[in-house]
Each structure stands twice: as C-alpha cells, then as structure tokens.
Length: 180
Image (tube, rainbow, N blue to C red; front, side, top):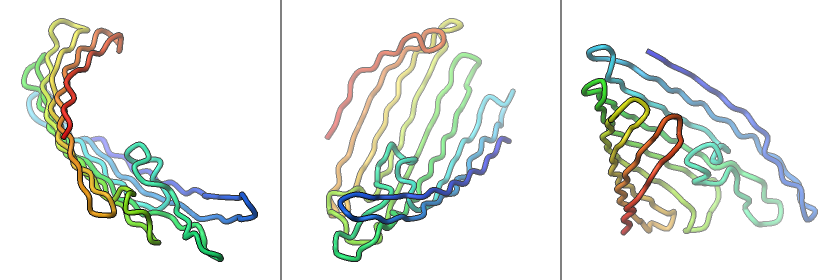
C-alpha cells in the first residue's frame, strides 16, 4: 500500500490602500493507494484534506483563501475547507480497465460572505478504457456533479467525454458536454 501525509503552513498578507493585515493558513492531507486482486490489477485510491486558508490548493480555487469583513477594524480571516475523494479501479484484463470515483468538498466562512460564494460540491464518475495497441488508449467517461452556493442555489452538470491518448500525451479528443 502507498500512503502519504502532507502538511502546509502559510502566511497570507494584504497591504493596500492604507490597510495591512496577515493571517495564518494551514492544512493537512492524507492519501493512499491499496492494490488488490489478481496481479494487483485493481486498486483503491483516496485522499482527504482539511485546513484553513488553503482554498487555492483545492478544487482549482473553488473557494478563497481568506475573506475580509469590510468594516473598520476588521481583519483577514481564513476560510475553512474539507475535501476528499475515493476511486476504485478495476483492471479487468491487461488491456481493459474502468474506474468509479466520488468526490466532495465543503467550506465554511468566518464572516458573512456573498450568497454567490461556493459552499459545497460533489461529483461521481465512471469510465471504461481500452488499450487497443501498445501506446493507444481509447475510453469513455460519464460524470455527474452538483455545486451549492452559500445562498442555497444549486446547479448540476452531466458530462459524457470520449478520449484517445496516443503515446506519451500526444493527443486527446473530447466531445459532448451536456449541462443542465
């Protein structure tokens, strides 16, 4: 089994228009991969991350690192985050494999924030890939995701993606995004 643990500490700083402040951001993340089955062709992969002021490191900046109360004497305050995923890969044969994945992220704001700020999101996906010949992979994936804003509004996404990979990342084709 492969496992890892990571920690981060960072200083967040603002200094403009006569205002200056700092805040401490921190996070901890644990991940692993456990192989199983014949020839260890199957595996379970997982990761969980928790912290404050680390929004830029999770979900492509889904939430900000800090917020400012906007009133005289207010301070920079870190935004809390939790994110995790789990994936199960099945290597059906030496040339055929599939993966089922689930992920979740939530955040909490220390001060009143815009109702348009992101609050939580989750997604689930499944795919099937085939190695047609050495160096050529073709596959299909379906994903469903939901996003919720602080104001309670929700939106969802359904995506069907076809991909082909030749050699070491020489090509990829994608089509059919279907949103609602």
